[in-house]
Length: 114
Image (tube, rainbow, N blue to C red; front, side, top):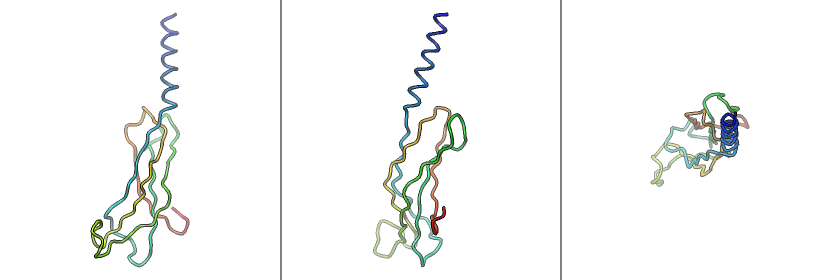
């Protein structure tokens, strides 16, 4: 009986530690992707999320909406005609030992809609 109580206490301790664990994902930039429209400024954001429901709720976390930039001849950091968007943000998600993968996706923001 004592051994069973010790196992329950250990399991409870592990669950409490897991509740306090966080996973931090730094998203620096999305680089060198073709623009959908060469004549209009485009805005983007990134979401980080677990691919399924699993043991924790599916809670996406996202960056701020950021303006993209189409490269010009004089910009050595970006290939000409391609677009880049710099975020420099760290997203924080609850850690889940039940999840093996974390998805990070880039979305275009149009007229207040994702």
